[in-house]
Length: 396
Image (cartoon, rainbow, N blue to C red; front, side, top):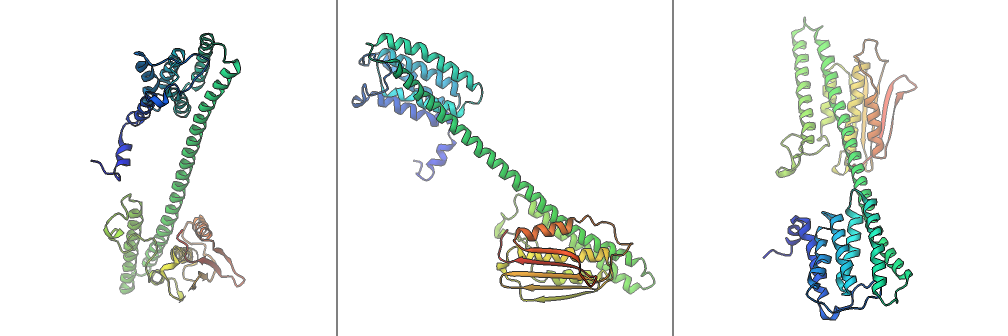
């Protein structure tokens, strides 16, 4: 016995024809209940007659095609219409007549091709049926009665068409949401890759350039090459973490991590700012670092954005003002994190190539998403200053 909890899933796995069959069987069975005899749909004024040997075949033709109302809606409608016509002409007037509006609703909702042709064929078939019923009747049914019934059938088709348009609009909305989500995710990954690759590669280029002039000082040369190696390893580690985030199975392992130092979190662990500063100092950039307050887990994405602001500012300092003093001030407050990075001196002419502006533009977008403020430009004293105010606590 299948439990009630598993029944819905089990039912959904069945073929759609099997799932639609019970409705037709229910109408067919209800038509033979004595209390409902002669209580069904009646078009025209044909006298009601008792069921006979032909009744089961007629009512079966009228009800059972509902099983195919979603798989083959046009076929289902044609068979139901045929059964309904015989039902009315024979004067059974059974509950099975309710199958016609149900078939119309399903056809309006699920028919994909030749919808206008189907509607016109159905309308054309109704005319001879109405004439035949009028002639067989005692003249009690007027033309307005036949027109009213036809309009009721048109309404049933319209309900199905409305359901179809609603379903199509919802599918389009979901498609747009999925596309927007993919676009936003690609943009986020592009920003992450830009931040990681640009910073580490810039530091390695600067360190390698400095090593060319240290051949006469083996100790300093060894330190510089060690710094290049450490920077490369750190770049590989960060890139591997980003690639782990792209893995569809990321975060599904026991503990939710991937085994890396950062696990499944996008937020840099405590102490990464100090590591970033030390790496920049080893690249030959004098950096003064001040941090006030303590990062809190409730800061959400603000910690990551603050880290990226400092990282991008130091990357630009290495590229365009290598050797110029740089000051960093990070303040962790209860409701926001403020970052200020200032670099003395102008960008030298021999600076490393680059400068697409993509980094600063990406930072502005990151901060704006969290509802913060971002600015980057020359101050009155000639220093290039990057400032950011990042509200804490947002998981975006």
